[in-house]
Image 1 (cartoon, rainbow, N blue to C red):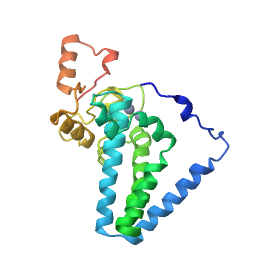
Image 2: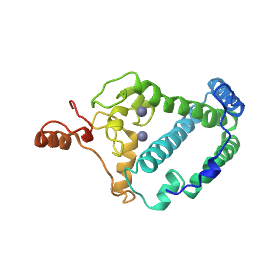
Image 3: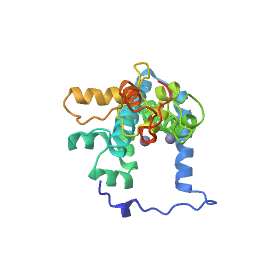
Image 4: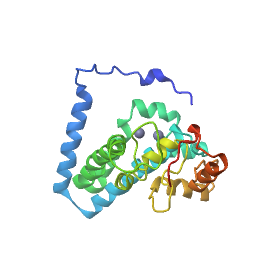
Length: 234
Ligand SMILES: [Zn+2]
Ligand SMILES: [Zn+2]
């Protein structure tokens, strides 16, 4: 993927420096998220949940993470645009706030302050914190199916909050697998989305690791080879 990295060039804050743009953005969004609680309506709440799924599952989980970062499956270009927006990847990185502003204006026009607070502020703050849980909680708490060289864990509650990204130990062991929840009860909404795309003929060359195949390989080859992600139990 050829990306013009120059446009991503931004002056990073030094270790002891506060990045004020980020700090103010975070502050304002958290205030907005708390304010949302005082403007609760069911419609606003449902709009918020829907947009959370659009951004968290279609955008981050299925799009940026499983499709673009790990290339766990392929889609026609237009689907890629919809999920994560290619040419557009560069543009969106630089002007990531534009769609948010447009969305905010539209939501405010349709449903006033409750829609704006729930659909933009509350939803974004929830999205940020749940995403961060993947790098904190699922490197601290949970179970480990695979012995990996890190502390990654599988956590059902992080998985529920991140549309399936909480099966993080599975993911570290098999990064390219488009499916992270490897058993039927390991809820993985991002995988259900990718599965739906295959049924619609919109995703192909879907790579998914299967526990039964790993077990078979292990039986055939004796001691698990390091390269095969060191399976301990299923
Ligand atoms: Zn990790
Ligand atoms: Zn990853």
